[in-house]
Length: 90
Image 1 (cartoon, rainbow, N blue to C red):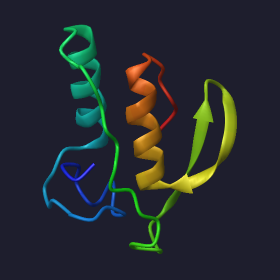
Image 2 (tube, one colour; image 1 turned 45 degrees about the vertical axis):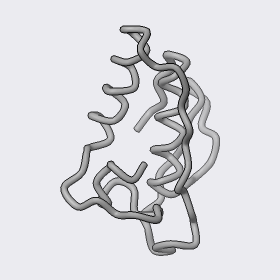
Image 3 (cartoon, rainbow, N blue to C red; image 1 turned 90 degrees about the vertical axis):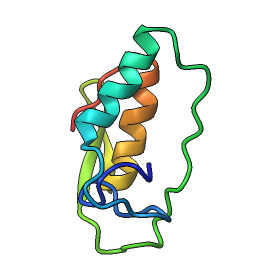
């Protein structure tokens, strides 16, 4: 999460200006899965206490709308769902 641009994920402990976009991040995870080079994934550094004014977005499971979450939490959901070859609406 720390390598993703703070305009996409602002609720992390270490912000990395000019980092990866959300699409690039999901693409990297999917590529590693496709090439069978992903052994483990540890998703940490999401803290909703940072940047409480971060914009919200809807999270989905397939076509089903789940709830409104911050962009950072939504990106975490997208990265984890990409492990299972499932797309979530951005």
